[in-house]
Length: 113
Length: 110
Image (cartoon, rainbow over all chains, first blue to last red):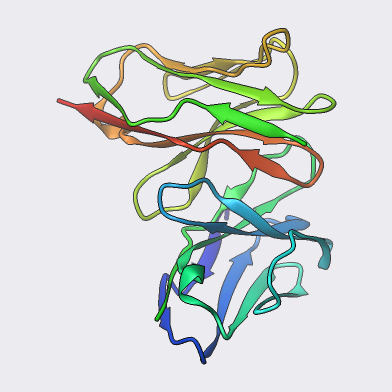
């Protein structure tokens, strides 16, 4: 199994809603990542988890709250988002932290109304 | 900090034409370099990689050589197909972080 699975594929939410994005991998990877990608732009790193602990937070607003319940799962909890947060949210994983490639999920397309 | 400069597209080519997408980088140390491809509505997939100077990465007819002296990692393909139409990202891997270029959209017409 060389897949990173993200759910849901599409999400529409209002600015007062609370929702969660989920990401799962069963490759035994110890590093997991959240990226945000706006249309026609490259992915921007949001968070990095290393051995289930948050190791990098790229100054992301607190309305985005990551969680890593175990080595296979990564969640992104969303609360009080703004319309400008609408984007494709990509989860990725890698075996290590230097030369290894990233495995990406297909992403969650989020629209905030 | 690390950065990747990539030619902006879109690039439009006829089928069987030669492709070059330029990529240069700025980094401390000796990063690994990657090309990722993204098809519409999907996540990124690794196309090829190189981990040290003079390495050549290759996959599906695409090639790129890690040139430390010119800090470049240009993507080439001798004969593109319609199915190669996608967005191509050059990327640099430091410790824990991957820095992406802006992405180049390639459109191949029959």
